[in-house]
Length: 205
Length: 205
Image (cartoon, rainbow over all chains, first blue to last red; front, side, top):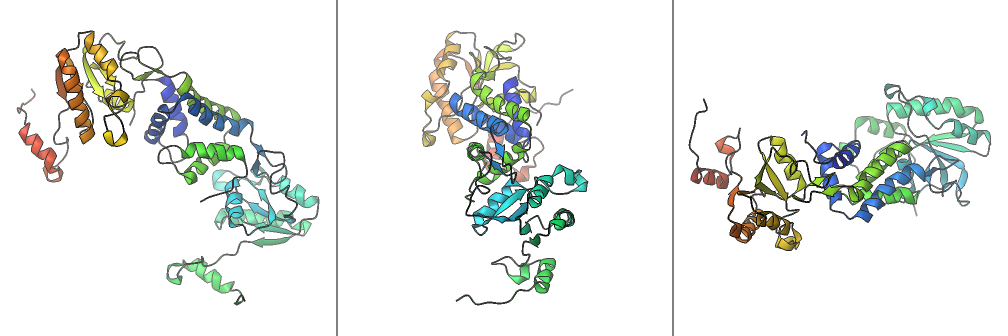
């Protein structure tokens, strides 16, 4: 649908929304027409919330996660184990892991994953700052919590090779059958690995 | 998914996006994380395009369509027949009709449709300004181009009752079998009406 817009301002707003992933011209127009029904102050709040992402949002000096201050909530929390670093691809992964409430260490956000196909190499990621943290010492464990894909494995391998001179323990997320899954519907690669890496059966009292 | 956001600014932006129709918290987060990868000036352009919808966008003084000036492109176009007004529900309908390039009259945007279920009555729509245009005279025809729904029919009837004292010709969009449709798949109400309102068969030379 190649529409003639009655207004340049309307067209501009639609083009901006259409740059977002999964949003085409048609959806963008629907969103903007919805916005047109809002009052001036609501539009100002919306617009400013986007502008502030560029001007006011900080990245934690230590772990590169987003935050509103110089050092993020996790890194500045004395109750968390600062000697275990969980290396993740993105900010979203931090949020997802935090949501499990099972992890008491700290994070390091790479900001991506090594992917030669997309032209992303080690120098495009926050690896230098991770190395700095290890250089300073007091890091006992690195948890590699990247995607279980070819790119994730490549990045894991690269990090292992580069950072093992600092002698941390390296670990990775357990791979296996999802809780609640029936064996019948588990893919064979996962099932095979779950058998090889079987764990002791315990009965919690 | 009820996530803890590492940043208030991030959370604010996500909440704003989640107010849009068809966009939930999860999609909103994905959109905002995409925005985080953009540079400051791109975010400023995006944000400002939304703010300007409230501050700079005008509605045409005559037809109530959106425009960047006082009177829209269509209303100020002398080559268009200013004596035929096509009454539509929304700005989008103007764009869709303009896109057919078949209409040379002008428009009037009601900004909605009479719908007692949604609490929308005649006073919520741009009907007074439509009446003003008829009062001024020189309007020969009113094309009622509203949806073929109960609400559309109600609004058509209301407009007809209220505006017929000005003696325009009232017309409505032809209803019938869509071009390219097979009879087998045409719904029976449409098919029945197409039979009743059959048109002379002509062979264009």
